[in-house]
Image (cartoon, rainbow, N blue to C red):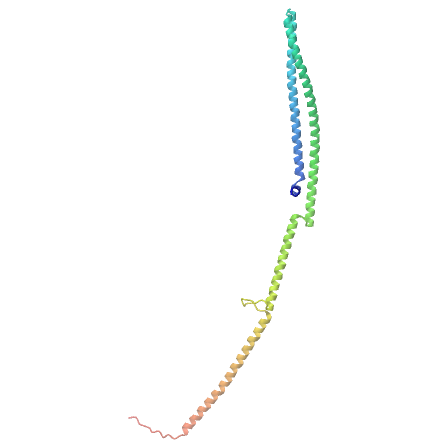
Length: 259
């Protein structure tokens, strides 16, 4: 599990890493180190200068004690001359110790100064190399992106290509579904619940059936009209014959005058 986690983390870091940012970070760290070295040189130089001031003071006191001893000896005060020379000897020991420390600090200062100069040269060379690598990386990255854009294998172009492919697939699927539904409705496999859609064959059959019904109705009406005309003529002829028969019979019915 730890190896898998480290592998995953390493892959994620490698994907997120930008060499230009890494170079800039390394350059910043080198500048910080150079600044520390320079501060160290300044601190050593300050200590050396302080020792020089102390040495100057001690040497001044030593010279003063020497003059006081001579004056005391000239006045016949040998005891005072001896005391002045004793103090001068103690100061001389301190001067010797300070001179040793001064020499050590001066050597350290020279070493740190030389190290700072070398580090400065390395930082300058690294800065030049860094800028060269960054420019090369940027150019290579731009060239790679242009090549991927032309070839269509970049992530952005890949997403666009996938979107176009999905749109084409959905369009083809909808077209196929619409064609299948039309074919099923035309064949009668699917009933149109609304009753509005009819295929060509059903429309032709309905047209022929409607025309046949009209023709049959027309013939029936013609037959009724023809049959009705014959019976009317017979009724008219029968009425005329009855009138003639009544006129030929004698009128035996008595007539009454109106009083």
